[in-house]
Length: 175
Image (tube, rainbow, N blue to C red):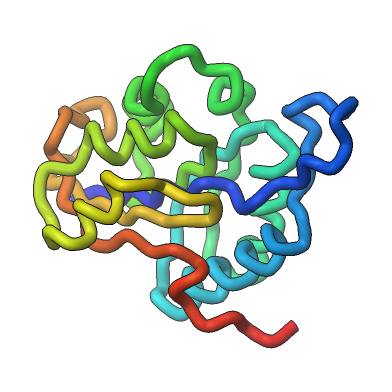
């Protein structure tokens, strides 16, 4: 069984209109949400073997908030393709780059993160699937399980949505 953790970057700062999109950092609300979801990762023992993270500043900052909460060994790959990709979803990137990971965390952007989740979900709690279909907000996490032994075999609607979590629905940890 494989587990996919799809995490949309936390809320970014739009305060400097001259700044390139790829260089936008997290804003204060985003930093707080990233800490909240990071604590959730630790509390729920969501420990990836492999982390695929967009090369954008806001995704790297989201990852930086997670790292202190992750135990064990894991491989991190910063990927421009997760920012630059022209596909509707990240499925081809997962199929190509998943390797031997049993639990893979992908930190990316909308609309691709939402399209990936929607393309892969085949079963799960109806309320979570409905919630996912409405919006994949910044800082949100979708956890999907697959009855396959390799990422290359990912198929549409083959995943079971274990949960869909939004930082605003979690308790905020102390700083």
